[in-house]
Image (cartoon, rainbow, N blue to C red; front, top):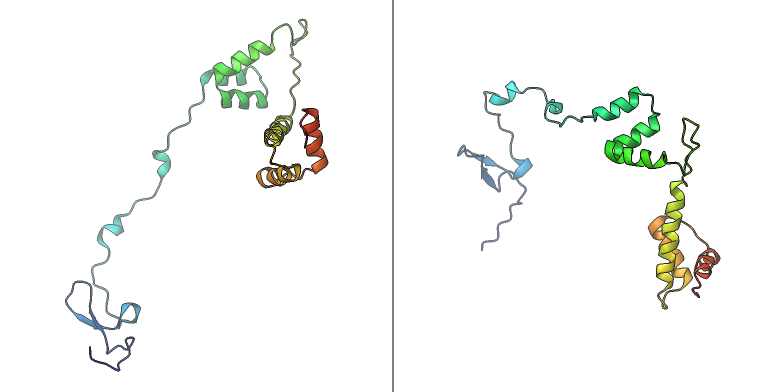
Length: 171
């Protein structure tokens, strides 16, 4: 190979053939000397239409039976639940809640007590603690770190030990 002292980035050192035109343009990449854009414009781009994709989106249909629940005056919270679980599942739940064991037979209302969702999450967290505590190689402080990492909860080691003691697991 010959030792050429020209810089590769010089406009004289390297020439390239410009995009299929056969014309030699000095330089590399962005360092090419400017050339005129071909005339004539973009053609099909000038006939671009608006982008209204809602035409293609599937239409959400509300069950007409849920609309009837709304017309009879059912509260917004119950309507949201009916929409989320579906009319049939909602009616099964409603019929069960309306059974004699829940309400006062002379009243037009049903009194329902349900624990907060956070109680369920706490129950699941404690089950995880007990599951991990059954491993003899794991200590409460390791469980504490796992809970903090997975759930973002800061539990004390004594709290974890109390959960374990309730289940008669030694830590």
